[in-house]
Each structure stands twice: as C-alpha cells, then as structure tokens.
Length: 295
Ligand code: HEC
Ligand code: HEC
Ligand code: HEC
Ligand code: HEC
Ligand code: HEC
Ligand code: HEC
Ligand code: HEC
Ligand code: HEC
Ligand code: HEC
Ligand code: HEC
Ligand code: HEC
Image (cartoon, rainbow, N blue to C red; front, side):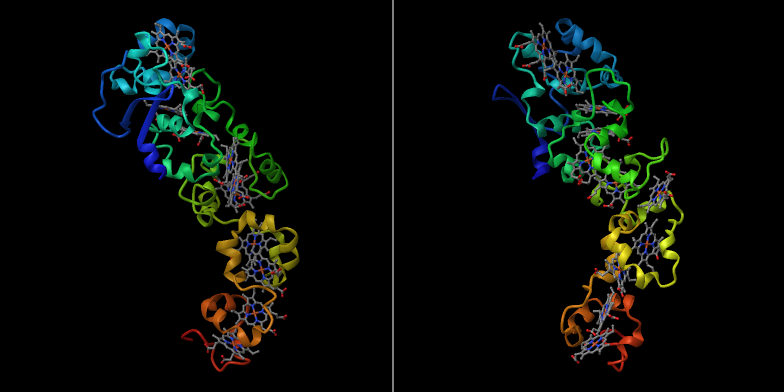
C-alpha cells in the first residue's frame, strides 16, 4: 500500500491535479520546465542562499534532466508559474506529507528505503525529511542536518539520553559513538531500526562483550532472579529478551499449578528450554528416558 502511494507523485495546486506521473518512468517529459536561471530572476534573495548549499551545487549540474535540475527538481515544472499562473507550482506547504517525502525519495532511494522508513515510528509520527534536514539555507552540520546528530536525536529522545547516563542503554563515548552507530534513523530491515540483528550488532565493535561482575558467581544461572527483577533494563542492554532470556523463560516461572502432571505439551514444544534449566537426570526421577527427544 505504502509503495503504491509513492509510485505516483501527485503534484497538486489549489486542489487541481497538475501533473500525475510515475516516479520511475523514463524518459521524463522535458516540456513545462523553465530552467533554474529563470527562477533566480524573481526569487533572487531566496535563490542566493539556496545556491550556497552543497546540495544545490550538485543539482545545478547542466547535464541533469530538467525534472531533476535546480529549483524544479523539488518544485516541479515552472513554465506556467513563470508565465503568470503563480499558483501552478509545487508549494511544499500545501503538499501532503507523503507527497513531500516522495519528492526527496525520487533521488534518495539508495540511502532511504521507502518500505523501511514507513515501518519506523518516525514515519508513523509523520516526521518529514525536512524535520531534520535543511535544503534551502546553508547549515553548519554535515549531511544538511539542522542540528548535530546527537542533538537531532536527543530533542525527542531525552529519556534515552538519561538512560545512557544511568547505564541502562549503551554508553556513548564522545567522538566515538553516536546513536547512528547502532541505529539508522531512516529505518532498517531489523527491529528497532538497528543496523544489525541485535545478536550480531555487538560483534561489529566488540570481539567479546565484557561480562558484568554479577556473572562471576558460579551459580549465576540459578541466582540471577533478584538482579533480573531489580535491573531488567540493564540486562537488556546486553541481552535480548527474545533471543536470550527466552531460551529459558519461554516456560513460565513459577510453573503453573498441576504442572507436575500436565507438562507434557509444554515439554514437547520447548524441550530445549526445559533442559536449559533442568538437568536430564531431573526428568529421569520420574521418566525412564527424557521424553520428547531421541536421546
Ligand atoms: C516573473 C517572476 C517569477 C519567476 C520567474 C518565478 N517566480 Fe516563483 N513566485 C513569484 C511570485 C510573485 C510568487 C508569489 C506568488 C503568490 O504568493 O501568490 C512566487 C511564488 C513561488 C512559490 C511559492 C508558491 C506558493 O503558492 O506558495 C514557489 C515555490 C516558487 N515561486 C517557485 C518558483 C520556481 C521554482 C521558479 C522557477 C521555475 C519561479 N518560482 C520563478 C514570481 C516568480
Ligand atoms: C531539494 C529540494 C528543493 C530545492 C532544490 C528547492 N526547494 Fe524550495 N522548498 C523546498 C522545501 C522542502 C520547502 C518547504 C520549506 C522548507 O522546509 O524549507 C521549500 C519552500 C520553498 C518556498 C516557500 C513556499 C513553499 O513551497 O512552501 C519557495 C518560494 C521556494 N521553496 C523556492 C525555491 C526556489 C526559487 C528554488 C531554487 C532557487 C528552490 N526553492 C529550490 C525544497 C526545495
Ligand atoms: C533531483 C534529485 C534530488 C532531489 C529531489 C533531492 N536530492 Fe538530496 N541529494 C541529491 C544528490 C545528487 C546528492 C549528492 C549525492 C549523494 O550524496 O547522494 C544529494 C545529497 C543529499 C544529502 C546528503 C548531503 C551530505 O552532505 O551527505 C541529504 C541529507 C539530502 N540530499 C537530502 C535531501 C532532501 C531532504 C530532499 C528533499 C527535500 C532531497 N535531498 C531531494 C539529489 C537530490
Ligand atoms: C529524525 C531525523 C531525520 C529524518 C526525519 C531524516 N533524516 Fe536523513 N539523516 C539524519 C541523520 C542524523 C543523518 C546522518 C546519518 C549518519 O551520520 O549516518 C542523516 C543522513 C541522511 C543522508 C546522507 C547520508 C546517507 O545515508 O546517504 C541522506 C541522503 C538523508 N539523510 C536523506 C533523508 C531523507 C530523504 C529523509 C526523508 C525520507 C530523511 N533523511 C529524514 C536524520 C534524519
Ligand atoms: C521529532 C521527534 C524525534 C526525533 C527528532 C527522533 N526521534 Fe526517534 N522516535 C521518536 C518517537 C516518538 C519514537 C517512538 C517512541 C519511542 O520508542 O520512544 C521513536 C522511536 C525511535 C526508535 C525505535 C525504533 C522504532 O522505529 O520504533 C529508534 C531506534 C529511534 N527512534 C532512534 C532515533 C535516532 C537515532 C534519532 C536521531 C538521528 C531519532 N530517533 C530522532 C521521535 C523522534
Ligand atoms: C551500541 C549500540 C547502541 C547505541 C549507540 C544506541 N542504541 Fe538505541 N538501542 C540499541 C539496542 C541493542 C536496542 C534494542 C534493545 C533495547 O530495547 O534496549 C536499542 C533500542 C533503542 C530504542 C527503542 C527502545 C524501546 O524501548 O523500544 C530507542 C528509542 C533507541 N534505542 C534510541 C537510541 C538513541 C536516541 C540513541 C542515541 C542517544 C541510541 N539509541 C544509541 C543499541 C544502541
Ligand atoms: C559502534 C561500535 C559499538 C557497538 C556496535 C557496540 N559497542 Fe559497546 N562499546 C563501544 C565503545 C566505543 C565503548 C566504550 C564506551 C565508553 O568508554 O564510554 C563500548 C563500551 C561497552 C561496554 C562497557 C561499558 C562500561 O561502562 O564499561 C559494554 C558493557 C558494551 N559496550 C556492551 C555492548 C553491547 C552489549 C553491544 C551490543 C548491543 C555493544 N556494546 C555494541 C562501541 C560499540
Ligand atoms: C555487560 C553485558 C551484560 C550485562 C549487562 C548482563 N549480561 Fe548476562 N551475560 C553476558 C555475557 C557476555 C554472557 C555470556 C554469553 C553467553 O553465554 O551467551 C552472559 C550470560 C548470562 C546468563 C547465562 C549464564 C549461563 O551460565 O549460561 C544469564 C542467565 C545472564 N547472563 C543473565 C543476565 C541478567 C539477569 C542480567 C541483568 C541483571 C545480565 N545478564 C546482564 C553479558 C551481560
Ligand atoms: C539458562 C537459563 C536462563 C536464562 C538464559 C535466563 N534465566 Fe532467568 N531464570 C532461570 C532459572 C533457572 C530461574 C529460577 C531461579 C530460581 O529462583 O531458582 C530464573 C529466574 C528468573 C526470574 C525470577 C522468576 C520470574 O519469572 O519472575 C527472573 C525475573 C529472570 N529469571 C529473568 C531473566 C532475564 C531478564 C534473563 C535474560 C537477561 C534471564 N532470566 C535469562 C534461568 C534462566
Ligand atoms: C515429578 C515427576 C516428573 C518429572 C520430574 C518430570 N516429569 Fe514429565 N511427566 C510426569 C507425569 C506424571 C506425566 C504425565 C503422565 C503421562 O502422560 O505419561 C509426564 C509427562 C511428560 C511428557 C508427555 C508424555 C510423553 O511421553 O510424551 C513429556 C514430554 C514429559 N513429561 C517431559 C518431561 C521432561 C522433559 C522432564 C524434565 C525436564 C520431565 N518430564 C520431568 C512426571 C514428571
Ligand atoms: C526458567 C527455568 C525453568 C524452565 C525453562 C523449566 N523449569 Fe521446571 N522448574 C524450574 C524451577 C525453578 C522449579 C522449581 C524447583 C524448585 O522450586 O526448587 C521447577 C520445577 C519443575 C517441576 C516440579 C514442579 C512441582 O510442582 O514440584 C517439574 C515437573 C518441572 N519443573 C518440569 C519442567 C519441564 C517439563 C519443563 C519444560 C517444559 C520445565 N520444567 C522448564 C525452572 C524451570
């Protein structure tokens, strides 16, 4: 559904459809474009600032097709606008959010995959590209960012910044790590917009994740209950509930009533989980062989 919406870019002006064209079709119609030099004539102040942005310099390349060049790359064909029909131009203010995004995405599908972006909370809360990027005025930050990468995130993720301070989210070493070291704000195929599957993520930078002191006690496997209850967030900094804790905790604790006589189905479905907590000889107290498996 999201895809279909993006394939057609509806350029509307005061409610009338001016152009409806497939985003990926080639060649693009060359008519109706006035050329950026013409825009400069009347929008000189605007255009001067725009011209200083690195992005604009790339877009001004004469070899670009008309629909991907200069002002008209984002504001659509301007011939009628120049001829006096002033409202016949893409005015961003009047575009729907998804239409705005489609304009940026027609050139940025390499960096931002529409389907990954759509799955992020950021897209769901209707953030646009220009919430974080500036394309008209020169800015100090790299990547046309309005704020530094860290500020870009912390303006909304204050709580996360606090968690990092408190040691319940990964620490950020100044100059070494940013939120982007682990997340891609534009979305990824992995949960929580992580750059990697969570289980593989740590290995990108750590050969071995350091074990906390608590783990040094020999009975940690059985004795983690109190710490796990008090500091679950901290555990999840290194472990994932689904991938790690549920190796054992897929079977509820304490076991349900009558579990002694009714654990058959659970044991067949999650035999390995039983054996992560119980030794085989425990089963052999009542069974002749551990049921549900070949051994
Ligand atoms: C002959 C002078 C002239 C030229 C050339 C011109 N514009 Fe405009 N443009 C205007 C005027 C005047 C307005 C304000 C119209 C209004 O507010 O009704 C305007 C408004 C706009 C707007 C805002 C529209 C809106 O409804 O909010 C955009 C976007 C725009 N121009 C882009 C361009 C682009 C892109 C070009 C080059 C293809 C261009 N203009 C060329 C005179 C011009
Ligand atoms: C990379 C895309 C891009 C290019 C290229 C671009 N603009 Fe814009 N323009 C925008 C966006 C996005 C807005 C909405 C305001 C904002 O977020 O900065 C906008 C807003 C405007 C507005 C205010 C009315 C509106 O559309 O909301 C005018 C006028 C305008 N642009 C003119 C120009 C002119 C003239 C040029 C070329 C010199 C140009 N723009 C090039 C993306 C672009
Ligand atoms: C007509 C094509 C085109 C359109 C439309 C376009 N861009 Fe770009 N953009 C480029 C090109 C080309 C580059 C430079 C090459 C590259 O890094 O991909 C670029 C680079 C960028 C960069 C990276 C700058 C850097 O220094 O790393 C950002 C951010 C960006 N564009 C944002 C936007 C946003 C936001 C929009 C919509 C408002 C937009 N672009 C619309 C073609 C376009
Ligand atoms: C919530 C903030 C935010 C939003 C919204 C956002 N970006 Fe970005 N973008 C960033 C940050 C931060 C970086 C720097 C990433 C890095 O350093 O890896 C970036 C980098 C980029 C780059 C250059 C690096 C690259 O991956 O090629 C492009 C192009 C880009 N963004 C395009 C877009 C487009 C198009 C949209 C809208 C679909 C968008 N961005 C929406 C924050 C944002
Ligand atoms: C305008 C506000 C805003 C900005 C700016 C913003 N976020 Fe978010 N982000 C949210 C909201 C709201 C959610 C959903 C609730 C939550 O998980 O906290 C979210 C969710 C996330 C998630 C969880 C994954 C998902 O898609 O649900 C990650 C990871 C994330 N943001 C990273 C970042 C990073 C990295 C940056 C900076 C480059 C950033 N955010 C900038 C508002 C924002
Ligand atoms: C070293 C890697 C790493 C860094 C750096 C990092 N994160 Fe995360 N982040 C993760 C992992 C792993 C998860 C998933 C586990 C979890 O939920 O705690 C996650 C989850 C999240 C979530 C979703 C939390 C939820 O409750 O669903 C948000 C939002 C988020 N990170 C934002 C950020 C922000 C903002 C920054 C920068 C201030 C940041 N992260 C820096 C690894 C990192
Ligand atoms: C992008 C690189 C990167 C990734 C990915 C990464 N780390 Fe780190 N990690 C670092 C750096 C750099 C430090 C040092 C931080 C500091 O000194 O503030 C660190 C420190 C740590 C520490 C020590 C914290 C302390 O206070 O001593 C732990 C624990 C840790 N990482 C666990 C993880 C886990 C678990 C993951 C996977 C979710 C992960 N890291 C992924 C780069 C990374
Ligand atoms: C700094 C990272 C880190 C933190 C924080 C952390 N662990 Fe671990 N934990 C590890 C590593 C590394 C291992 C060994 C890796 C493996 O066996 O897959 C491990 C192993 C375990 C094991 C298995 C022990 C065994 O004998 O098989 C349990 C249970 C465990 N952790 C529970 C917890 C709980 C509960 C918390 C929170 C109170 C926690 N962990 C916090 C890194 C961490
Ligand atoms: C190797 C198997 C194993 C792994 C992995 C494991 N646990 Fe446990 N967990 C146990 C056992 C066994 C107990 C019961 C200990 C006791 O109290 O006798 C337990 C008890 C608990 C309890 C108390 C009982 C309850 O359900 O309230 C909590 C909370 C808990 N674990 C959390 C975690 C968390 C969080 C993780 C992942 C970070 C984790 N465990 C990983 C085996 C495991
Ligand atoms: C306290 C005695 C006791 C212990 C210990 C015990 N079981 Fe059972 N188990 C039973 C009883 C009673 C039944 C139900 C009678 C039946 O269906 O044959 C049963 C049934 C089963 C069944 C379903 C019958 C079958 O053969 O498929 C499986 C599977 C099973 N147990 C697996 C295990 C595993 C695995 C362990 C060790 C983690 C274990 N049991 C520990 C008493 C026990
Ligand atoms: C997370 C760890 C964990 C997992 C997984 C687990 N158990 Fe247990 N099991 C326990 C603990 C702890 C007890 C209580 C023993 C105690 O109190 O000393 C227990 C008790 C039992 C009992 C005795 C119940 C009673 O009421 O006396 C049986 C039978 C049993 N488990 C079978 C199983 C079977 C079968 C599975 C797999 C389906 C399984 N357990 C999975 C931790 C686990």
